[in-house]
Amino acid sequence: MKVGIVGLGLIGGSLGLDLRSRGYEILGVSRQATTCQIALDRGVVARASTDSSLLTEAEIVIICTPIGVIAPTLKQLTPYLSPKAIVTDVGSVKQPIVTACSQLWSNFVGGHPMAGTAEQGINAAQNNLFRGAAYVFTPTEQTLPSAVEKLEEMAHSLGAVTYTCSPEVHDRAVAWISHLPVMVSASLISACRSETEPEVLQLAQQLASSGFRDTSRVGGGNPELGMMMAKYNRQQLLRSLIQYRHNLDHMIDLIERENWHELEQILQSTQKARPEFLH
Amino acid sequence: MKVGIVGLGLIGGSLGLDLRSRGYEILGVSRQATTCQIALDRGVVARASTDSSLLTEAEIVIICTPIGVIAPTLKQLTPYLSPKAIVTDVGSVKQPIVTACSQLWSNFVGGHPMAGTAEQGINAAQNNLFRGAAYVFTPTEQTLPSAVEKLEEMAHSLGAVTYTCSPEVHDRAVAWISHLPVMVSASLISACRSETEPEVLQLAQQLASSGFRDTSRVGGGNPELGMMMAKYNRQQLLRSLIQYRHNLDHMIDLIERENWHELEQILQSTQKARPEFLH
Image (cartoon, rainbow over all chains, first blue to last red; front, top):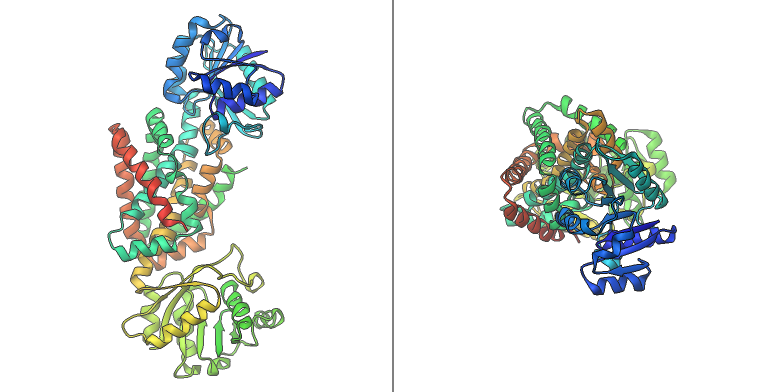
């Protein structure tokens, strides 16, 4: 089967490496000729071009561009695609993308392979990036079941664990476990950094250890990723943030009123609940 | 030099192991005879007893009991101590302890060795637990400089890095980097767990990975530790929580108003600030 990959960065490149080794014929499209050459040299793709006409024979097309240009990229591609081509993407927010892309291409299925590294670009592409990772597809009522089946088969060939749900359910779920933690964690760093007594701030910086390190990790990460979450998943992130503020307010209130019994119950429930989110 | 250790758990036992190997003569006191026997068998102490009169010859006495019983333990010990004995403790909050203990023993110096494991008890005692760890002493205006010097010398023999500051500065600093993260992290778990749509909650639990894992770690830990922080460092924890809520409110407001420029500045500043807290 011929699979087109548009955007040859970490995700697109890693998909190409694995899918080629599973027998798919990979056609790569990048805006940059140098990226095409690296992809060819590294064996990421069978053929590569800066020209979208390379994709006319592709049965599946995976758009692996940054989230903000997924729909514009699809719009530019449509004249070149085979009428039966299944188009999917790898964006980490689904509702706005699925809404926009379904209007451009009826056989579009939103996708989100949940893997990555701190590195970016074609040179960071690696084998087995998706082994054991979650890969979510977000069909709508208009989606052809056969299209989802072909994409799931492809994802399973990568060793990924597939899930299907509506775009809205996806965006709410990732707001909780991926986007909310970034904002919670960034606010922790901002708050600590706002200490106005120099002696306290300096000592806090000297004494911080694994607890601060872990809790602040995602809030001290790539600002572009955080911006992308806030912009593209704004509604669901706000829903989670407002619920979070409610829980925080309740905790502050309990400590102010010295209601130790109820605070203990909360801390016991969080100790019990956390393993339900870990695998 | 003879050092008395009262409370032979993880911290007391580990102090005993290391200090013995550095040539200190360790006198251990525990409420339980079985603990005394294990301490003797493991070589944690030179002598052990359930009777506080063992400490009459100790030049330094380290109280390693749970935080809630440090002052009551000292009160019970004072009849047995040599008038020149330096008394210190290992509690993770300093102001209430220093205030109470200084009234009971004028030569008391608050201490906080910042090391530990998930294990507890004499059987968890280990060598070199304090190597490279921070060890804070919190003298007051009444403290004898020679007492601090002797304690610092002891801490340096463990390989610890010593800091001295007022009890209040200590409690403010640990509120930021140790106690606030627990409450922030626990509220994250509570918020996620409060999702009312079963499909969203289940998917969130399935998709949660390293970001959620790290941000939720300290909030899903031992409830007793969180309770101790809230009870004994209530005032400074509330100070940090209220500043944190202010930062969170500001972030929510920026996302609501789609003020992406300012949100990006915040996320850039947190990326830049985090390494100042790591070593």
